[in-house]
Length: 457
Image (cartoon, rainbow, N blue to C red):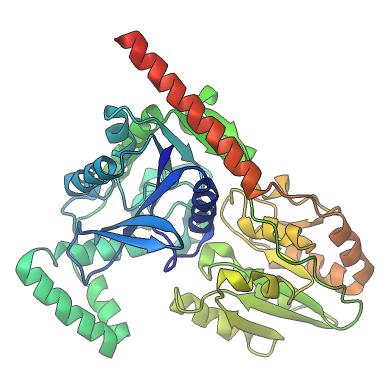
């Protein structure tokens, strides 16, 4: 079987949860299938729409350069230039099935284009990019607001403040030969004076995004709902949300992620010394590291906070974290390669998942459980399906530093509780078993599409 995985970006440059999962699944499936990855990449040094083929640890990756050089907002999710290149990728790889992980930076039309070629389509629902144009987390950062419902007025304001809007504004003036010359000057300015370059981009007048634009995008997402044969949500919470958004309940299954087993056992017990509190993830506002640091400032007793995450991805946010950490026992350990994951989880006694957005099924929780590390996490999204309060971890109210502080203080004061929670962490589905489930799904949708085609004939 030949499987094409489609995702918004990919390793090694991009290392968030969905990218890691797509890689691990494709690598496992490659034991008896041929897997390809098609992913977008923002690279102003290359022409918009360029296709580049490369290898990543045994996988063929087709990289589509998307520099957001669009004249209209609707081209960000349905661009004929991008569609033409995706048709080329489908023709070149000839997959038996298309597995969509994320259509951001690609095209909402990809599932339909695949179905027109008789290729069945399955999709994993990692986040909310189909209905949230600003990144898929359903949060409005500047207003510190989590979007329980999709509000087109708020979405339009949020998109205008997002990095995608800046990319779109920059792209609107860098099309054509003269635009590439301007782009070269802009790259030089960014190297010499990055703050000035960012200010210059923000001053560019680009295509305005209005509430009607947002509503048209939401309506267009229904084409995706119609073209995908089977959706899989890793959490019941995510499944319920998308059923409410319009996916037929009969075409969505709930099945959690699979993982490769750790190469070492759980970390050794730490009966004495400070409580080691860990954070692992992207250092971005919606992951809530600032809530953890605010909670830490009021803790009593011996503890230390270890922040594991790349400090260069969102430097402005990291600067606020460093300022908040002054005077507290906080260390920024930076990012890490996946081959160091065992060492990372051995650096702390408890993992904090301080997410503000309705998380799906965070990979870091599973990673911690596999290594005997209990979790303190926000009671939001699919997290309570994994972390059971008082059994394998503790839950607190999202956004509330006081609530998180109370949980951490409880663990500082009662170290035997940490050991008790650690002993009750659940087992985690293996990537081998997950791949077996996906092979069965692929075969089922292929058989159904073949049967439907035969009946139509």
